Amino acid sequence: MAFQQLETRLEGPVLLAPDVHGDDRGFLVETFTQDGLAEVGIADEFVQDNHSRSGRSVLRGIHFKVGGGMAKLVRCARGAIVDVVVDLRTDSPTFSEWEAFELDDAGHHQLYIPIGFGHGFCVVSEVADVLYRCTGYYEPELERAVAWDDPAVGIEWPESSPILSERDRSAPRLADIQAELPFRCP
Image 1 (cartoon, one colour):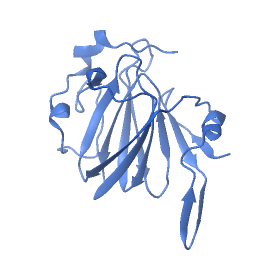
Image 2 (tube, helix red, strand yellow):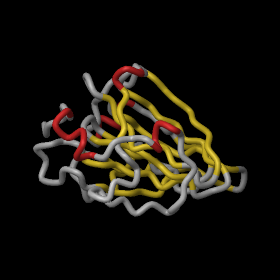
Image 3 (cartoon, helix red, strand yellow):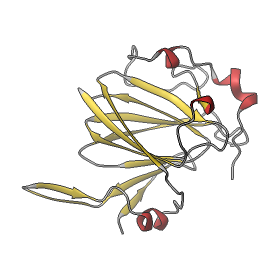
Image 4 (cartoon, helix red, strand yellow):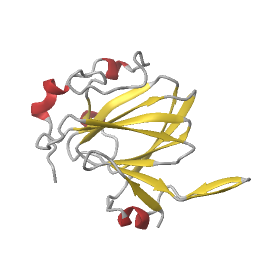
């Protein structure tokens, strides 16, 4: 088995621990095998890979895609991040709840984020390279965001004054866009 599935509180996201083969020379880790993901119930077809680099205290998110939505498989290849998912499925018993995971270049954990969840992260190392495997192509007209500091969601970020993009600084609160959310539980 290529991945061990770790426990999550919210139903939907899947935290994965890959097999890491290491010795005094370094390590080898398989970061993606279609069969390995299928073994833990992830059968999505991934069509695009993205790579971002950010410095300490940069916060990106909470982002999601409308239309057909987009699932992601996220890992931190360099450094460390606190990765956060928010349940945006309006009929979910955990709607608007969040869960955080530390992803780093030591544990090599990966987080599968299904359609219906917002995603964001905050860098807690000097620099972090974050890799996303996506089930949809980037379509700017379908990209949306929720305020990172929405008090109704109440995410406990590791940084109280993060470095933000203009998009993230001006993102709406969840209550302001809830009626427009297309996501439902499977």
